[in-house]
Amino acid sequence: MNKKGLSILMRTKMRPNNDPSKISSFSPSLSNGINQMMTDPPRNQRSTDDSCSNFSASGNHYERTLDVVKDSMGLAISLNKTESLDVVLDDFSQGYFSLSNENRKKLVIVLAKEYDLNRIQVRELLKQYLGLELRSGNEGELSNVDDENMFSAFYRIERNLRQALKPTYNVLFERLNNYTGGLKFLSLLRADILSFLGEENIASLRALDSCLKEKLSTWLSPAVLELHQITWDDSASLLEKIVTYEAVHPISNLLDLKRRLGVGRRCFGYFHPAIPGEPLIFIEVALLKNVAQTIQEVLLDVPPIPEHEAACALFYSISSTQPGLAGINLGKFLIKRMITLVKRDMPQISTFATLSPIPGFMQWLLSKLASQSVIAKVDNMEPPTGGSGSTFQDNLLEPDEERMLLNSAPETYAGKSGMEVMLNLLTSKNYEWTGSAELLSALNPPLMRLCARYLVQEKKRGKALDSVANFHLQNGAV
Image (cartoon, rainbow, N blue to C red; front, side, top):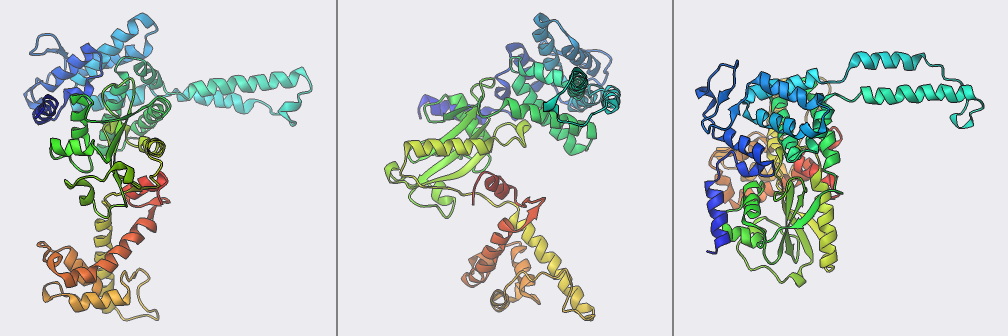
């Protein structure tokens, strides 16, 4: 094994869950502070006294109290002296990471509520605006100085309204974005906010998250992102991150990693200059003669075809490395940029496809089968009242499919209907039916048809019910 392989292997095996390398793009003093946080004793071993700061075991960092960090945050927002701003932002950032999860939540709620917009000022400006008289006529056809003065008053109040509608915490976000390591901090901050919202749906936190998400979407526009093809020649630290962050098909060993970066394969990532050495998102591509039918065709250790024979580029994995960027669709732009590059370098490739899991299908299907089985039992118990059955009845099976399932099901999985048989098969503990050619033949047609229905017809708020399908359909898949 070469030195790079050994380095990746050792670093991946030895990396703790709280990975300091994920924050390596912070300023040195902030990185030290976060590293210290990761080596702090468990919360139940810490002092519960929040009245003073506790000196850490290393002797060079304090575990800040909530009040101290709150004051530091207020100073980072209100300070006007540019020369002192970096020091204050560094102090606030270190303080934030020294807090327990509970105190971080309290601090973020303070930020959301106490540094929100001034609604009294907004109401006053709206009263002024509504008090202005709008004369009839076209703005482009001003006839005298009075008309010009009238529109001048409108423009002035509109400008003041735009300013008043900006929450005060915008200042903190914008200052952090211009601070070394600040973009990474903002991503981690939003990850915390999303976590807190998962625990408790607080309106002011939703507004804070919406504002920060909008800012991050602007600061991470494709115009400022760098597309990089990741290869085996990249640094061990970067390859280690690919192994760590791969979210769809885990990389089993170094040979697997090398194969995914070798002949017949491509890996592209989006990078931001403010977070060097760490992709925000990356995609893995297989170059094939035809669209693969199973992921095993892509991942198994078989010799790849010569690249000049490839006619299909198959996307089989896309992974985001930053939980705080959830909802910011970088994948859409990455896929389009990657297609452009592949077309330029390999013009013979004419098919671009995705091979993706369908995570919600089985849950949807089992829920449908269970509910329809209950409805069928109720309909059998109650006499009809002039109709042919319940308005909620949805026979998921075609007559031929129903007959095949009833005829092929052994007593263990027997039921009064084909849907009941299918439910019994799919919820069985031992999955013995997977070894029966007859049962597989009976299940294949309805499963394929119902899966197509799930992907194409089942919607939520106008979008595909399945999250993976929705992602690809939004990005142009058909």
